[in-house]
Image 1 (tube, rainbow, N blue to C red):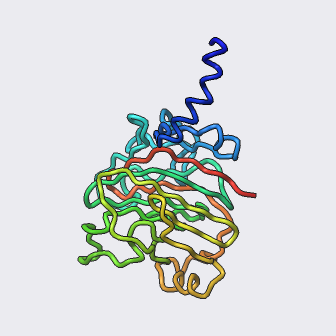
Image 2 (tube, rainbow, N blue to C red):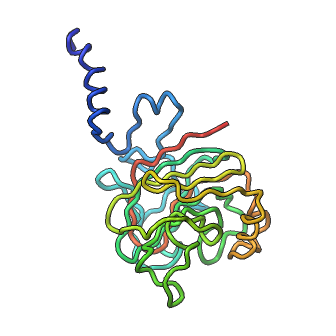
Length: 245
């Protein structure tokens, strides 16, 4: 590469940023790399993931296609098809960003603080804090439309997100921030939930939830990141994390 071309590279990078040209999926910018961000999905392989309660990646159901990590699932049951997948590493304090897409009537989730506590659940998914992903408007739960704390971006069944219903069939960008006992959920650039795990309201939310019998649920210190198999097709891309001290 000649000297003139080398001089033009910074100019081109600056121009693309100012013009709002999107960064390619499943990549980190130089600034992100310098800041400590790490890709959890490279767009080509399942490196860094395994099945929940397993030592290898599921043989079916989860596939990599067109730069997406897809759950090609169809039985509608929670963890009844291919099963959930988890990161190899555990995380305590972090910022997690991911893009996702669900079809009409779809249901999935991204969980954190997954301990893989024994015994393994006979039915259903491992308990953890779930950033809910669901068709807010059309998913039917126990014969009714969804309560607010079961809608997208909520901490499932514990804290409701404050947002309008989410459109299905398009890509959305979500962010989870965990810093000590403080939690934030973001959706498409908007902060839609804040929670303090030490607060009375959070602990009451746990008491009123399906997790009330899960010992220490409000105080789980660290765990894996989990992508949920809920029996509906889902796609993920640009999954990246910045661990905090």
